Amino acid sequence: MLYLQINDPEVQISSQPLQLEIHQPAAELVIDNYPSDYSRGIKNNIDFDRDNARKGMQTVYAAIGKIASEGVMLSKIENKGNPLAQLAKASMDPTPVEITIASVAEPSIRVTPHEAEIRVVPGQVNIGLNQGTVDGKLQRGTVDLTMLQYPNVSYRFVDSRVDIQV
Image (cartoon, rainbow, N blue to C red; front, side):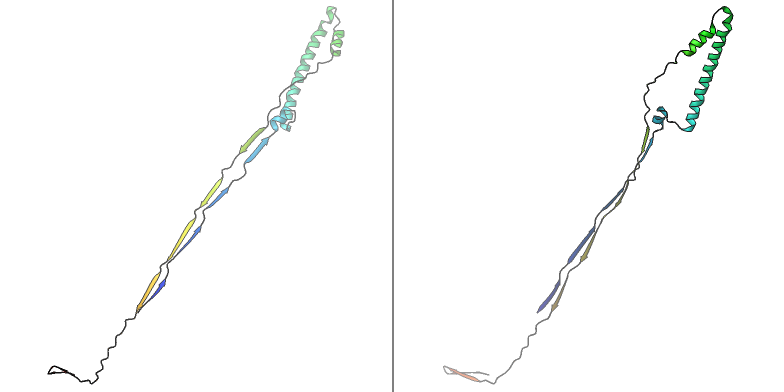
């Protein structure tokens, strides 16, 4: 008799997915309003002092020029003119008001982008194989043969002859 024991083969598949990690640092945005503020008259201390010094020098030069021109007019007093009246009249005239229309400078805008950091972790596929087995056991059959003899004598008569079997 043949006895068979069969263990089926098994395939085990497991997988880890691919991982994609993306990190994007924030961009740096720098807005410098100083050019715009400067054109509207809002200045820092250094520029304020420099502009006032420049205007002071212009005022001093204008005053020196005015004093010099008045001196020249007063030196002509002996020419039978009335330079004091002319100087008084000139100082009574209102100074014209200056209105300046100018565009406002744009603010300085800088954007510093940062590169994205991309990291790829590859996935894995794990395959396990358990091989199947076939175990067979053969039990050979046996044949027992036993001969038994029984005493037997038979006689037959056919015609005139005698057959004897033992």
